[in-house]
Amino acid sequence: MTRATAAVTVLGVVALALVTACDALGRLRARPAPDPPQAATEADATAAEADATPSSISDGSDGDDGSDADAAALPSPCPPEMALIGEAVCIDRWEASLVDESGEPHSPYHPVRAKKVRAVSRPDVVPQAHIAAEEAEKACRRADKTLCTTDEWLLGCQGPARPKRVFPYGAKLQKGACNIARREHPMTRLTGGQHRTDAVSLNNPRLNQLSDTVAKTGEFERCATPEGVMDLHGNLLEWTRSTYVRPLAMGGFYLDGATHGAGCSYVTSAHGAQYHDFTTGFRCCKKPDKAALGALSGAPPLPVPRATDDSRDPAGMRSFLDPTGRLPKVSPPAYEPSTAKCPVDMVHVEGLRCSVPVQKCKRWLPRLSAGQKIACAEFEEPTECKSARRKLNYCIDRYEFQPEGYRYPLTHVNWSEAQNLCRGMDKRLCFEDEWEFACEGPDALPYPYGYVRDAKRCNHDFPEEQLVTTPDNFIDRRVARDALPDCKSPFGVFNLVGNVDEWTTRYNQKPPRRSILRGGWWLIGRNRCRAATDRHSELYAGMQTGFRCCRATR
Image (tube, rainbow, N blue to C red; front, side, top):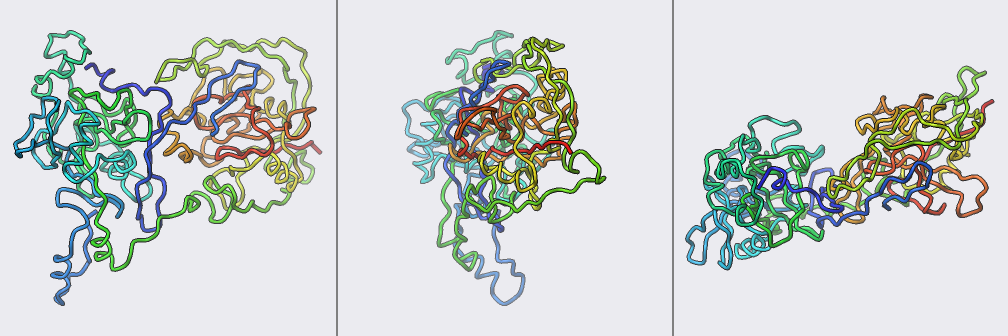
């Protein structure tokens, strides 16, 4: 298999399952694996566009009162070859190898085929490759375990505490820690440089028997989580159970640990449950023994946290995860100096706006999964104006609405709620041409910063596999309103594209069709000045819907 084939491209819309719910003690329970969201696509320069609707445990005693002996006698929540993660799951410490019905080892270099094999987890052995997801699931069940769900696998890799680890060992990449950087592809070594990707060649038993390929379990000693789980990054891809149409393989392998996500977030999904090659491996998971957990903790486990327990937003308030929380109280901002045309939190916008710009795309941003043209990577410059220009003069919020006490912009508001909040500040929602002009400036720029799309400037273009944990549970990718100083328009207005979608008002429309969303959010798709979504009514509110306000100058 070539690097490109082994690092399998993401097909369709893939949702990478990430564990999001945790309580103050980090006691988590795994959630279901992901289904794909519906991705947004780029509209043409003038048309409105539809978007996606979105550790070991001890008693801590070192005295001589007998408590050490009592602790040693307590039953373990997990089998000895497994690690307990966040009181939620037991996960194999080492990538799986196989034994047959007589207990004899199965060759890690050959497919399983019709054999009835059982998964074992042990150090210092070559882990099993050439195994399909459905075969891995059966092998785990014969060991009284299950194939890890994507959530369980991620919990083991990222850990139960916040912030989540990016790599099994921590937040930053440590070169040489994991088996991800073998220098030469075994296929080219075996064939003298020939490029072969057929099923027979990819399952050649000689591939992983070459030096500098797959490592023995635990050989890379630094590639370990704090709980002692080895090789979650690199060595072999690891099948996981997903509610997506295909199983997901996680963590990368010995030739690549970065193409489809960094460390724990590496995910591939191009193959079905019967596919196997020299890169495919697995490990098993198991639910911890509840009685043992209770005995260790001295109390029953904490309840599973509600989805509304969102530490990123104030408790009880309207939030990313709580669409029914209280809306914040607002008041009109001050003018400084008192003779200023706009309040202190607003920017004065004045100039001539082109009503009909011609914006021609030179280069498209490909969708990695299928290569469709979904967004323009670069427009021709300058923009040609095909109409008369109209003078505009008004005030607009410098940032997306981020209430006092919030660390991120407010979402889950509908058009009417946004309008009422603006009115409470002696403002109103922006008309769509006001929003557009503040974004593109007199030169009608396609992006607020110019002609070349740049997701490093603004909060957009997250790949599809990093959007959701389940179909109804999007990953919160918001950033603080002042976190991206380069995401700025010619007038000095920030975050007009990406981060959160922004409600604006259409001229000459009657309820409930006065609403239109501008700017897009953090997915790949509508993240430029002229594109819009008009498919939602004024009553729609999503985890991505926010706003900013406008008003007339004084």
